[in-house]
Length: 507
Image 1 (cartoon, one colour):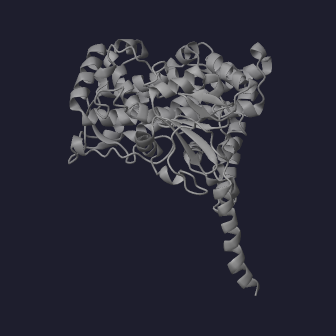
Image 2: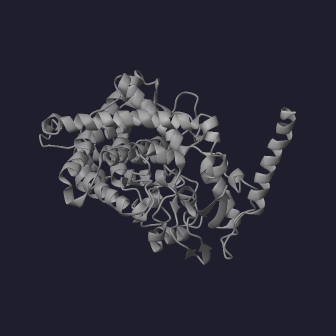
């Protein structure tokens, strides 16, 4: 009898919940942006697909560059034009400075104490100031020049060893990933974690963290289904990664704290001057309460974690796509080779002093960022009050997604937008700082990426040297037009298949 009761009761309970969500959804504002029809409970989630930037671009073609969707119970404004992006990131930047809260990200990133996802307020302003003035300023970025040049030289050596002969393909995806990880480890921690078991586990942790942060978690959009995270093991996995990462970062910070009076151990051997890594700088701020900053241990760990979340995947994926497009377009590759060889004539390698003279190199990187912004849907924002955008009423606590990928391929802004043409950036005056809203791979405004300069110099230096040192070709049997350019699934768009290419050292 009890079993029979369950047979009828459980469907009845779910039916009541289903109908309640359907009929008692809060009404939208009278002058809301265009919106496709919604399904009960899920809203428009079924229309997002595996590649949200592509799905949302198609919907925008039908409903317009400002479009209101509902992801479960959460209203979402999708921005797909430069004009609308300007309204969000410049005209009404202050209203859209906050971030929506996501349960998994909140737990992994020290309960919102990191700079990237913390809500707008005094704490975020302080972190932003620390990063902009103390960690990622032009002076600080330049102080790590020797680290970047040494690691790029190691990249070149690794390619030489891996190629063995002119017919052996090199896994460039792995090479670029190792490069960016090692650069950021040295800059953040003062040493690399890539050669032993601890380093191997650290790399795995970064991968697990990025997968969790980039995943879809139903409880964030349909709160009454949050129990699914417990049943499917997500909660346990998040706790495991968070605890293990925290233990690792605790060890790093403690090691630095114990040797804070002996900075010479972490000085750059070539420069001879004290070149503090990021942990050193943050501990100094903490101990001296520099410029009125007040950082605790959790804040320090959260900021350092931001460096890896924001700087590893997003940096090496640009190199990966740039090399793939160069291999597909021999004309562009030859033109870049001419510039690199002319600049590097008689030199053992390209240095950062040479980069300002290499205009075509910079155009290649920009064109790569236009077609493949590392985070195609920029980190979401959230409105803090009611506001009018392009004549539409946007309610407070609306999540905002800016489709930088769609804007970069907008035919109203770009001639032949699907084609790889670096020449479009020569003498254009368009830079990566977010002032031209048709090109915002790093976002714009006060919530724009503070590490733009940091990322660009690594990408430019690396690409220049691998083209300077090697002739590149595709493996036997692979034609340029057949190179697989499929994207992987996730918040950062990498290539789905590793990039394999044949490197022939130049004599």
